[in-house]
Image (cartoon, helix red, strand yellow):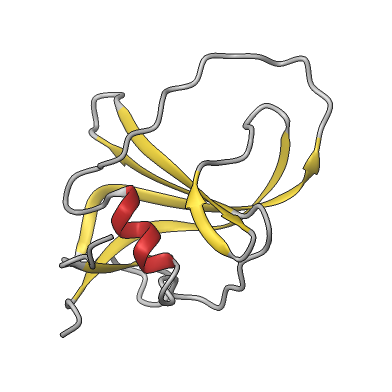
Length: 134
C-alpha cells in the first residue's frame, strides 16, 4: 500500500464556527457506534459503495491514515464495529460513498448492515486538507 501524498483530518468544524478554505466542499463524514442488532422486516435497495471519491479521498488512503495516525479533531477511541461513512454529494442528488468498519483492532473496508444494526451517531463533519508530512 502506497503512502498517501495528501493528508487530511475528519473535522467536526465546531472549534471556529466557520468553514475554512482547506475544507473539501461537498465531502461529509459520519461516525457511528454499533449498539447491537435490531429486529426488522425492512428491506431495501442500497447504493453500492465506491473506492474513489476523487481528491485523493480513496478507501486505500483513508484506511492507511486511519490505521496509522489520529485523524479526528476530537478525542476518540475506536471500538469494535464502529463505522465511518465518507461521502461526496455532487449537489444533483447523486451521492458517492464508502464505509469503513473497525474490526479486530484496525479499520477495514465495509460497514454494518443498515437495516439490522442499531447505531448511535458519535460525530459528523467535513474533510479538511492538511499539509503533507515530510
